[in-house]
Image 1 (tube, helix red, strand yellow):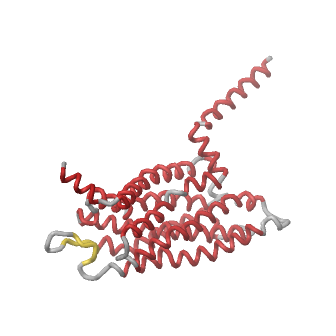
Image 2 (cartoon, one colour):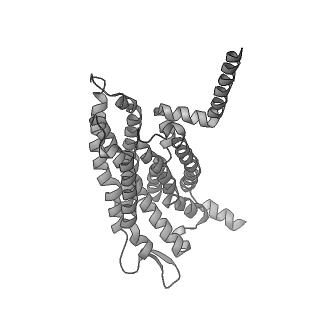
Image 3 (cartoon, helix red, strand yellow):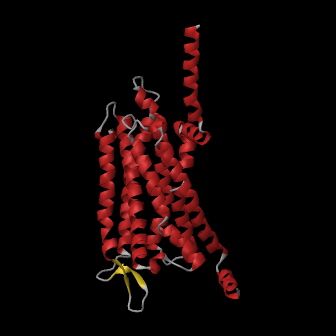
Length: 316
């Protein structure tokens, strides 16, 4: 009992906040992202031919869950239980290392292609290859496969047991880190940052001038709300994700509390899709309320009552 008390007392308040905030992100983020995915799979959003962007939004909701079970989970375990998945076994070390890098890169590039698709939709009166449902599914598959291939060496070569019995996250034949931190910074932040800024700027420009145009198709007016929602989410990605990765790549030996705080901001981004959609996306909000209140169940009964009344009137 005294040993446990001593261990707890040696953990600073800042570290405990970081640990339990990471745990809260896992619990809240898993629930919210699952809700987002379920709502986007409802009948209102099943017409992906009209709005193929929904494929991206559903996939992002799944990968945002994966994001929370990588280094974020390790933050909680290391601080509160003095236990790291990187050091538990070679299998857990490989899994945490791979999923943390794979999920972040895939999530970032899905958002890049959302920006490209929204730019193509807002600047063209006809559908481009970036706006077709089948093309988007192919793009999503290509992003996932490319990210797997890029980081496959982590599953194959990373993590080995040293002679003293401890586990190293490096590979025996070469040094993965810090080189892969710089690769991660470029693939996850720098290149996506440049592309998102370029295409988001184009989308914002066309949104501003949308009302001044005299000939606008109805489909483009209907998609304006979802375009605004996605511009906000991708812009927040740039603000919340870049500081943590820059600090982790170049200032890893700095104050650990600050590094964990920046990580907390990064992982917070991956749980805010649900509240953002709820605030800015009216159709999502209506479907969320309908699902939580079982409104659709009541609607299904009403048409039958109308039919019965019409039959009775006809008979009389």
